Every structure is written in structure tokens, then in C-alpha cells.
Image 1 (tube, one colour):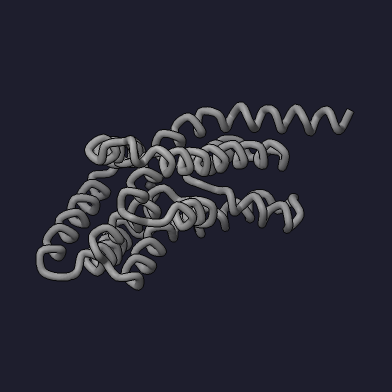
Image 2 (cartoon, rainbow, N blue to C red):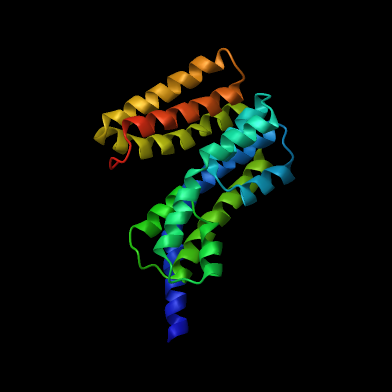
Length: 229
């Protein structure tokens, strides 16, 4: 009976992960195609999706690489962009203390913005449910990247570039609800964008991104502080 319940939770996790997978695949295909068109080796692209597993960070890294930005700037910029994962993983470890450390450690590696949102809706999720959810999402991202690498030669550059807007649309859809509730967030967002554009006219693009991230985050701490977002 207990085994059947575990399989039920596993199947429920897969079902919950399908909508995420459907969103990941086209964006991952775009990433794979753009990275391949930027002259990155297929092996490196697949390793990036397997180990980094962060859409925004991967797109940023490829964009900066294509622009001729140095490795150090790419590492620092993508690292700062993905710092939010540390917060999500610490929250996950604190929320699911009942799980053994190996389970918490393994599951935390599969956390993304979308999977974290799903498991945060209800606290009492089984480890089988979360494993199936994260495996479904992870597999779709890797599969989409592979398809993008294979099809890069037949996808016109203009089409892959236009498909990239899907990622920005996803971030905008996540950002707008928060902006509508707090005007300060809108001010911080616009200021950060303006700083990045202005500095990129005078200094290296990679350092412009890094500095604008730091200044934007500092402005957020100063304006918002401990307020609820």
C-alpha cells in the first residue's frame, strides 16, 4: 500500500511538471540554437544546461560570449544573476527539515523559479512528488537544448533571435504583478535598466551589467529594506 502511494505521488509530480516542461522546451530550443550559432561546441552547450540549469544565466552567458566579453565578467555576472537560487534553496531546506539531508540536497539541485513556485503553494509535498516534478522540468530543459543544438543549422538566425523574446516575456509576466503593487520596484527596475544602458556606452558591457546589478540591488535595500514585497 505504501509503495502504491509513493507511485501516486510520483505520477502527480510528473503531471505537475508537464506545464513547466511545455514552457521550458521552446525556450531551451532557442538557447541551444543561439549558443550553437554563437560558435559554442555542442558538448559545452549541453554541459551548461546540465550543470548551470538556469535559463536567464545561460542566455546572459551566451549573449556576453557572443559580444566578446571576457570569461571573468561572464562568471561574475551570471553568478550574481543566479544568487536568488541560494535563497530559494535555503528556504527549501528550512521548510522540508523532515526529509533526510541526501534528499534535501538532491532536490535542492533541481530548484528553479517555476518548480519552487509550485512546491511553495503547499508545504506538505512528498519527496517522490518533488523528485518527479523536478526531473520532468530538468529533462525537458536538457532535451530542448539538445534539439536546439541539432536544429541550429536549419533555424534562421533571425528566427532564433525572435524566439529569445519568450524568455524576456516570461520575466516580464513575473515582474509586472509585483510592479503593480509597489511603485518603488518599478523605479528600481527602470533605474537599473537606465544605468546598464548608460554605462555600456562607456565601459565594457560585462562590467556594465555587473555594476548595474550591484547598484540596483543596493537601491532596493535602501528604498525597500524589510518591507513586504
